[in-house]
Each structure stands twice: as structure tokens, then as C-alpha cells.
Length: 423
View (spheres, rainbow, N blue to C red):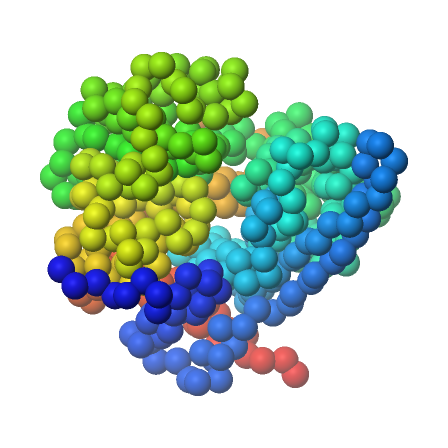
């Protein structure tokens, strides 16, 4: 098979997001002005802020917050800490959040944020001081009714608690709804930590059944063994699937007979949260992992993992996108031509923002649900969206990603046209 030349492939995340939107607009009757409105983020904030290190030195950090859209409601999106965070990455992630929230029929727009930092290089006290100062810098643009952050790559419930406390102490009143993904003790929702990985499991099981592949014994490969990838692996194993390989920044591990995911997690917990060296498996590179023969490949790491350069090597029957933007448009075309079903990120990993919405609702009414109630609501909402995308794909004759975008973009356009432009 002839594939696109990798050197001309767009791998800038914002260019990829723009390409995906432009493809969807070909199926919709949208005026050039509205199309241009959709392409541009509503608001972008870049901040440079000082943090005192434990040794007394001052170190400068750069952070971003981008609100792509508030047409359907408050902006919603995570905060990531990573050395490669850039404004274009955050712009792309914010746009993807707009489509994700729209596809899930949540009353939100899209936002995203990040700080250029490797959090592993900071002590716990330095991490807290950096988080609180960044939260303080964001106060002019965030709020429970305007923009609601959440965890993302290298951030967690504790970091959300620090952000909430900083916002609360600055404004002088308790505001648990300012962030989601918080610890349960300070207003978080049961089931939120597992929600993204659980959503990956729900959509993957539906896809396997649609293709007539038995869930029991289905071979699963997971790239990225953080919160999303590890939970997805656990959940799929509990459904009877056989997880044969996982990887993280340290490399990958492979056992064709299946890994014991609980045991891998226990091992990683005692080895810097890394899987390398796990004794019950063979070492494998991330590149080799992506090319393993399997039923389901779950890319749950970062963007641009499946490109025109390696899409022809993918041997999975289903690609379930646990990460945001792991597949480039050129790679999408190759996978579609080869008959590989892609469950797009804005559907597959939408479990996190869906339970974030449920957490926000619970905060607003000061009434909390059981974990079973939360998971029941999540499963119903994921099912509805999966079947809406599948029906659109079959009716329009497009792949799952394009079907998801057609649905999501149309919903935003419909609300935009009803609201109009002010003044």
C-alpha cells in the first residue's frame, strides 16, 4: 500500500484539529463566517509566573489556558503538566473538548490548559506552590459558571484540590464547582478517577460486539499506562479480554498469554510508577507495541502516535483512542482504507468529562450520588453517543471519526445560529 510521505504530514496538534474540522464542514451547510468562527479559539491566556523553590531560588514557569468555545455553556477542560506543553497543543485540545462535550450532549464548551514543566523534577511542596500560583494567575478567566478545569496529563485530584482551595481563599467563599476531578472529601464525585478508562471500556466492548468479535479472550494492547490506560486495561480484563502488552515512557512489556494487570500495577507502584523490568513479560519498544497483532489497540499516551509513517503497520481490528489526538488525519485515511475501526477520541475518552459534568451537577445541588448511580449514568450516556455515531457513520457512509465530528459540529452550529451574534 502506498502511504503519504511522513515529511509532509501535519503533526502540529492545532493543524491536525483544523484539518479534522475542515473535513467535517464538507458535510455541513455552514457559512464561511461561521466556519471561521469555529476555527478560532474565543480566548487565549499565556502567563509567566515565579515560584520559590525549596532552596530559596526563584524559578519562572510558563502556563496557558485556552477557551475555544462557550456557545453551549461554560468552557470545560483539563490542566496538564508536561515539558512539551505549547500554545498550539492547548489550542487543539481546547477545540477537541468543544466537540467532545457537544458529542456527549453536555452543556459545556471546550477549554484546556497546561504548564511547561516536568512535575517529577519538583518536590511535593514545590509542586503545590507552582499549582497554587498558576491557579491564582487563572482566576480572571476561570469560574464555576465560566471555565471549569479538571485533571489531565500529570495532574490529579490533589492538584485539583489545591486549585480549588486557592480560588476559594482568594475570593473568600467556598466554590467546589470551580474544578472537577477533586478528592471525594472536598466535593469530588465517586467514580471520577476511573471514568475515562471506564468509558474506553464501554465503547470498546460495544465496538467488539458490533464487529462480532467475542469480548472474552479479545487481545488488547495499551500504549500509555497512566490513569486512563491502566484503568482501561483493568476494566477490559474484568470483561474477559486478554491484555497482552502495555507501555509507558520507560518502554513496554509483552506477554502473548496475557498480563495480570493488577500485578503490573503493583509492580509499577514500587518502581516509580513505571512498567519496565516487569518479570512476567518480555521487554518491547513503544514502536513494536503499536505494531503487535491484536484485536484492540488503545493509544492512551499523547498526540500523534499513529501517523502516515506507521499506520500501515497497525494490525489491530479496533483502535480505541484513550488519548486526545493520537491519530493524524493521514493515518486515519490509511486505517479506514484497511478496514480498521477507529473509536475517535472525542467519543472513546469522553467518560472523564461526562463524570466531571456529573460532579459539577452534584456540587451545584449539594447532593451526591453513589458510585453505582454515577456509573449507570455514565454507561447510558456513552451508549447513546456510541450508537448515535455508529448510526451516522452507516447512514452517511463515513468513518466513525467523521461521523462524530458531523454530529458534534452540527450541534454547536445549531446553538450558535439560535443564539446569534452579540451585539
